[in-house]
Length: 584
Image 1 (cartoon, rainbow, N blue to C red):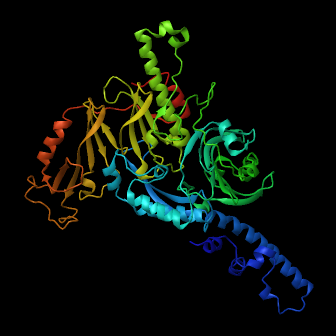
Image 2 (cartoon, rainbow, N blue to C red):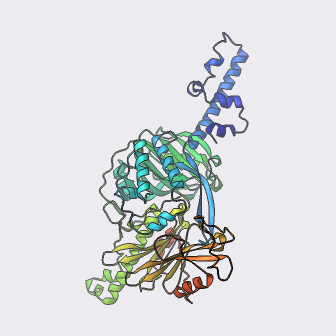
């Protein structure tokens, strides 16, 4: 649907008015086109009044169409993706929606580059085989690409091509900063007393984003604010549901800046487009929650857009943290990159009593465990607030409720220490992940022990069965492919045992390589054979029958019981309170 078609969907708008609304003379001068009146030497009073009435109507139509076109001009496309069900991750839901640019309007180089990149990503590695083969291994790409969804040389070359075509730069550094530090780096305070916020992340060019909240109609509402500085490539986009769900208004703030207010059903937007930057506020509430356009005006007036549009190059002096009893009283390791997340141990009773008692073995163990939990809390805070992960891993964020994700603090590998298990699903399918983190007391860092798609079964004997995010094989609904892992105590990690897939003859008796179904292998005649791939490559070379497959899988799982992981929702209260009562 084009913007003209979108206008035509408005009720009671006649065709001739729609066509005339595209004339520049109407937009600029608010009069009927010159061509329609140049042969008229005079007009009756009745005719003049009619023309005036039409002109007023046209101004109203142009005003409405302008707002709709502005939101439409932010739309990158409609994307369909799959996410695990919130209650049962083994159930995959298909979702779709309109995604908008957070960098600029259509035809701007920032918008065009983002759309071209997202269209490329939508068709690249669609079955996930490439990223699955890479797994947890480093990509060996030069620094800089780690700020984007790039994991192959081909992707890096494509990104360079797009960035070069539109004359943009790539990000080179990012810091996580406190409220006060953000104000310093952007040139001063820019929020009113009615808004509050947590930590933010800021890039070397002044682009930044944070989560915050504001009280509207007596209820605290969550929001996200992002300022994207023009001239640098961004891949971030926002799912807004559907463009047609929004009613739109132009508004001039108390500071004199013209902005757009977008009132949706379950979320709302405040948008400002300036020469130097593009600002979007995503309010996680809409008309169904009682939000009105007056509420959006209140929100807009809490932000000093005049200050934010005057972009200065920030002082990238490393990460900062909230101290002295702040809501998130923890620290992120400095250096501008999240290679490892470190945390200051929360003082325990032994530390408060002095060094003598803290030297006792029992107290040392208590302090070590407290440091472990404090480090885990820092990881959870960063995921909750900024969707950032240890090791600089990028999983993305789709804008849905962050509290749909889950976590557990639990000794999953039975090594005597609690691990942190994170189930992250508020992203595209490729970014969905189940991650096990462990704590290294010697370096006071959190490391990634294992990661896979979050369709996982844990067993008491250290085996993990991780089903794939896709089923592109020859088994259809009869068998879902998976990878089997086994815990290695010496290396304190999970090692891959094999990838497993199958071929259902009922689906096709010839595979994608032109080979016929191996009748000789299908001893029991059920029309299903299995492939156990112990190497690193996905190769359907040596099929086995059901009996041989069951013998193999039983040699690893046997009678081992499944582990019921005590997940909690990733909420602010759960992040704070798990320190008091670990779940293992």
